[in-house]
Length: 286
Image 1 (cartoon, rainbow, N blue to C red):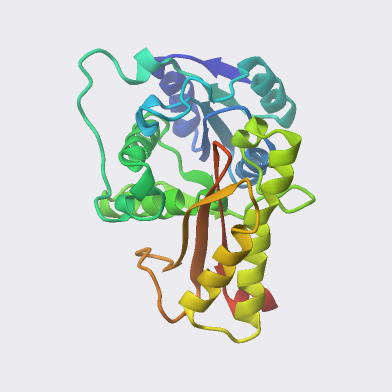
Image 2 (spheres, helix red, strand yellow):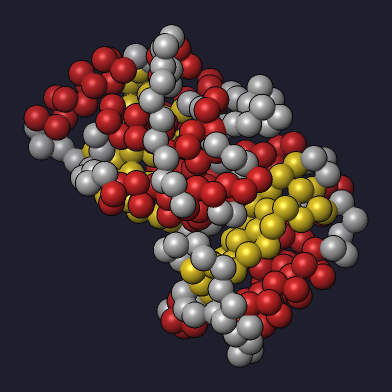
């Protein structure tokens, strides 16, 4: 595996692959890799000829009171993991490489970025879209792989790709969960054992939504209130939002039409966690 720190360096390596007709798969990450990331990497390795993983903790998607400086980092550990998987290239640039002095250009998907997580994290998706577009321009991948856990992010990036006529195809893979149902996240490392147990309430509430939907409930308000009541039984949990929305435009639904995204963000003490499921009887049968 070649580890590249400079934009020119990764471009030079990939140019030879593209000239030879090899397909390029790309997995953008902020590092501290877990099985959720690795599921994306394996899909790229299976689907494309060359796989590029980026590790970059992007400062522009963190708010002033968020955890940019505390975000878990261990590049040596990540390099060892990716080497064992057979990744071809790791792109791990510095902040100065990606945002040189005088940097002024940002990308926004104007309506979608202000919903769900965007309400409580203003500017977050502007930072996400900016860095993803920059990475797409650098890597020029045929395929890029994202996880369903960041459902709003995946929807926004797909919209950006469509609106800007990018040729990269987006593939979104299912959420990877721990044995007890907790969605894997680098931020889970912030949780102490008591908080880790309390965090299970996120998935339990999503399971409740699925059960009510499967039993025939279609009133979104009824399902949301049931979820809220369950989460509020956990003393360490504080709800940021619970929402049932349409999959493409993220508009809140009153009557659930398939498929619908059930998404939530919950603080477990100071740790903000997100999770979601898609309500679809067709998906349930398959």
